[in-house]
Each structure stands twice: as C-alpha cells, then as structure tokens.
Image (tube, rainbow, N blue to C red; front, side, top):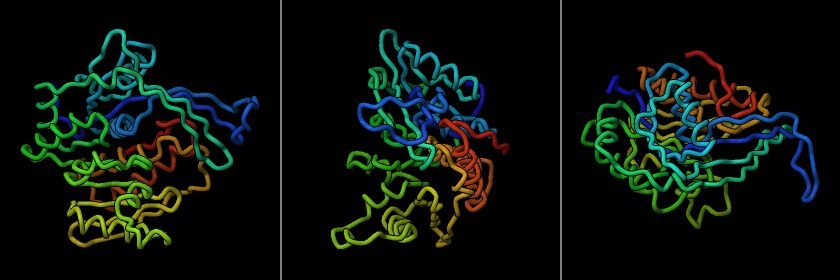
Length: 304
C-alpha cells in the first residue's frame, strides 16, 4: 500500500447521463435538451472524488462490471486521483447506470436508475481490512451493507472515524446499525424526519435544528447535521455547540445532482485536514453551491 488514506468510502458507483431541460415533458411528448453530459455518480463515489479533487487522499471500495459504464467509472475515478485498488471488476457483469433529467427552472432532477449486476459481487478481503484500518475516516451510506458492517468493526478497533451519509428517501430499518455506529451523521432532512418523526409530530414540520438535537440525544455522535437544500444545514456537536450553516447563493442553482455528495466530500476533506466543524461546514456549503451552478454530479472547480 503506497499511502495512508485520509478517507475511504464504501459505495455503489453509477455512470450518469444527464439532460438539462427547461421543464419536465408531458407524457408522450418529445423535448430537446439544452445540454447533455455524462459522468460519475453515486453518493459515496462523488464524495470521494470531491475530497480527492480538493487534495485529500481517498479510496473507494466497490464492485464494477466490464461494460462501458464500468470502464468509464474506473477511468474517471483514476483521473480524479481516487485510489481504485479496492474496486473489483467482473467480466460479463453490468455496472450501475442512471438517466437524469434536470429541470432548469427548479434545479430539481428526475432519476431513472438501473442497478446492474456487479454491485452484488463485492466481497470482504484482507486488502479492504488493511485499507480501512490505516485510514482516518470511513464513509458509507449503507450500500454494500454486509461490507459496511465488517468495516465498522475494523474502524472501531483501529480508531478510525466513521461517517454516515443518510440520503433523502434512503431510510430503511436495515441501515440503522450503521447510523448508530457513526461518529459523524450528516443526514438529508427527509432521512432525519423519517427517523425522528412520531405519530404526534405527523401534522407539523419539525425544524431542522430540532431534528439534529433529537438525533444527537439518541445517537451520541461526535457530529450530527441535517441538510435541507437551499435552506442550508443545521449542526450539533457532542460538546453542545450548535449552529446554522446557510446555503451559498441557492438562487444560482441550475442542477442539484451531486450537491449532497459534494457537500459530504468537502466536509470530510476539511475535517481530515484539521479544520474545525464550522470551517469544514462552510467549505462544504461553498463547494455544493458551486456544483449546483453547473450541470453534473461532479461539476465544481473550487480550490481548497
């Protein structure tokens, strides 16, 4: 192993095909895209590429097919400086792919996703164990769940910080052990709301800070954050400190693809390089904002 990693991610990589359109078409209609772009996607994959682009040493643990999507994912990760030694590649299998329509007027996107067959083939190896044990931070979102559970054990034994990405509409019971193991829980508002909300709260919208405080009380993480798109993010630390990080120029957004993923990657980069929580959260907001001003999941050009 040539270098110690700042951040190691476990996740499913996707090859994205994005179309920027003025508005979503009616069923049965044909519309012309303003722009078309292809590139890497997948929450953990984009986070690792983001941190690498900012200057961190990162690695990804994943499983790809030998199809054109898998080849392009692997090549792009290498070009971004992400260590690919723990990515397995399988002949005759397919990689994950997505077709994304991004609506300019709202900056929201509609995604159609094909998981492929290779993502089911990842297996635990001594190489993966060594890679995690020698890193600073382990980052995952629950994909490759059995690998994540083994990785948690190694991280805890090795003093490696654990970061959990709770994405919107990704809440499910089987990932709760991973959430509860986290030192850093950075959760989309919809994910946090799904976890915290009780029947008594069903008729009111809980403030993001209230969600973060409730999660901190339950989980006892080092850091809990609830992200809420253009409304910014709310942060609570174990020592009781809390703050709101505003979103940066959300009115300039044209495509929100990858915003949460670049947010995670930038925050982890800042933290791994010794920044305080507030400084790293501000960096994350700046990077996510710049990403949203361009088409694509990894579109920002911000320097560290």
